[in-house]
Image (cartoon, rainbow, N blue to C red; front, top):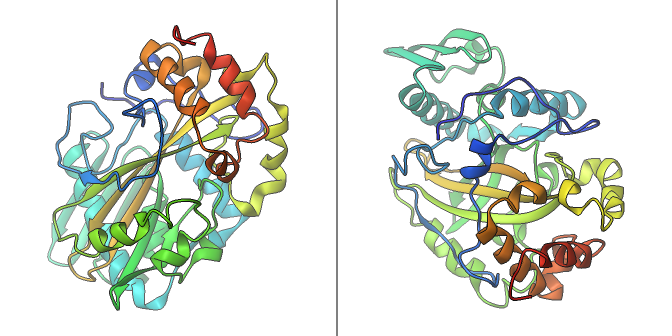
Length: 339
């Protein structure tokens, strides 16, 4: 189902965020089995994908577009360092502009348009009332630095990874809705350093295999994977910088409010090779669904219970679920006939 953006809802304070039935139906439920274990779950991101799904296009624009752009503006106002680009990443940022603009204009012509006359580009974003003409490659002709200009117009977080010496380095990004990681802290790190805190996966050789695969991605062959965690309340910004705002949320879950409070948080991660800079554009598109909405799908409810029930202790701790894991498992058990 194709989703039209709806009026702004909030991901903080009064948490007015909600999913329509259509948004619930297209939610990217991430579990193919009743158990979850780390794996290199990467597959080609072939577009167009199934019509109306989150996999249809390179960039997914849905009913939460205006809400997410409003949240991004709030975060950047509070902390401008959530967007950064090292000087050598300027060309990669322009690669990102081209990829995003051409994709959005082609896939959502009702909302976006792009006119190209040599290096003179005219971009229109009708959802945000943006209409700009600029010289491609000349950052002085944009109202904002390239990464921020484009990043304020696309849902999800974006990182640009420079590839050198057989490794990938996180050298640019706009990250305002992270699942407990910090762009400012990770900036400049290599792929293995960036993923250093993840338990079990290193011993299993997951990241070594992933890096070998990612550094070989060619232009025009993007790949994708799903990642997940749980979040208390419909909060997008769970960064270390704002931990005082959300850390106590985990203690607010009770047996009576699990369905309302606990949300499955799924990231659709797409890696796409940039043609000029050879950087990898890493988009991290976040979707939230409350347990109340999730259990309207009996298959999801049953599997979610089994996944959480069998989750290794190391992953429970790493994903920050310790305070309410048992409550969530008990609440979900009523939807699992085999329990």
